[in-house]
Image (cartoon, rainbow, N blue to C red):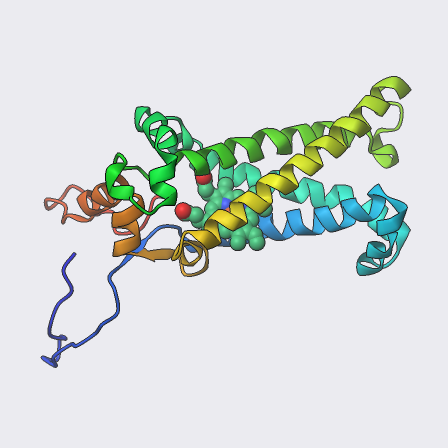
Amino acid sequence: MPRPLYSEKGDHIESKAPVRVSRYRGITRLNHWVTACSLILLLLSGLALFHPSLFFLTGLFGGGQTTRWLHPFIGILLFFSFLLLFLQLWRLNLPKPEDATWVANIDEMVKGNEEKLPELGKYNAGQKFIFWAMSGLIVVLIVSGVMIWEQFFDGLVSIQTRRVAVLVHALAAVSIILVFILHVFAAIWTRGTISAMTRGSVTGGWAWKHHRKWLREVAERQKPAPSGTGPSGKEPAE
Ligand code: HEM
């Protein structure tokens, strides 16, 4: 949408601020940060319980026993907050034919030659991979976590199954930490992305460069609706 050059009062607007495009609603951002904080607290409390050399981390939670009962409850919080994100975003993360071309030419993306890649919707294949990896690992963590949650589920599974569940839980935890590092690295590396989750918007240039198909869809939604056909969709759907 072109910016008006004059305000309603008739003053000339000489703003150099780039046009911004809405990407996430406030409620989605709030939920995303609940998810992020839960995962950070989970990895700190989980590491504290994982190895005696990391036991000192229990100090952050008020001691060993508190850490032990708190950790699974934070896991429940992560599960439900991520579930909300999942329900909102899973369709946008479904694979598309252009994802294969994007992956095959990922070196062009790294070199900054995104002009040579197909136009993308809201997410690229890397973001989609992270989304599905997080979804799968959170399910594995919650299922294996319940199996080893003695306080409420003692005797739910046999001792042999419990041993396997402990191993699976630890492997899934290490994997999600790696995926988390990748997610944060990608968000920082692609300049201008963090504001999507802090301000809820990105610059028009960012959207044009990285997610042009999505930008076209947003522009289409923002066209004034013919009278009587409802809102013109100025807010992002997610
Ligand atoms: C300090 C930690 C984190 C930072 C800085 C961060 C940053 C971001 C940013 C900037 C976006 C917007 C990307 C875009 O719209 O292109 C995003 C999206 C997202 N983040 Fe995070 N995030 C963090 C932690 C997490 C955690 C722990 C999870 C889940 C366990 C998570 C799950 C998601 C999901 C599902 C999306 C939507 C992307 C998609 O659906 O593919 N984030 N994050």
